[in-house]
Length: 247
Image (tube, rainbow, N blue to C red; front, side, top):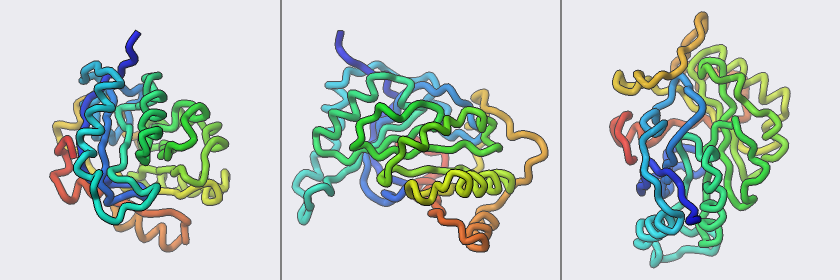
């Protein structure tokens, strides 16, 4: 049987987050997710998508990457664009593993955005895994698979998406309890408000009693607590309208 994946979209843009922020990146957004985080801005990928063979996906990635092939001054190991698998939740589709292996074999720097609710131990070690630890306001904090921490490497990253004061305190506690700063880079993102049309997809509600935090308050808390994290802003939501797709 031909290996295939259900794909929502494939597009070339700039990486908006992570330690790779600002670099050209081809995004492969796979369909389906088993979480419903309160702040999710890609709920359109929960069900919409088309089945594509791995061969067709690889061909499209190579086509979009072709203009970079003759870029001057490119050193070994710095091939651009990056390629990121995102979703949805890419690990829900078993053939995502085969796709990541092939992309690595092609010499791409491969990133994986994952919720942290699925086992990371079988992923090709060449892949840079960007794993969420879901905070309380997501409504999905109980889905965190903490056993994944043992499988992370220095080339991976942990991301906390923070929308409330309680989220910040929870993240600070996890960083200390699991000594996460010694594991890999830590990312902190502020929850960007959703546009009205993005909120009607059956997302979880923010639990009652939590105190919203502003972007500035979050930054100031990180500074005051000397928290060993990288505060990141989603660059694509500054360059383009926050609800625009394919960027």
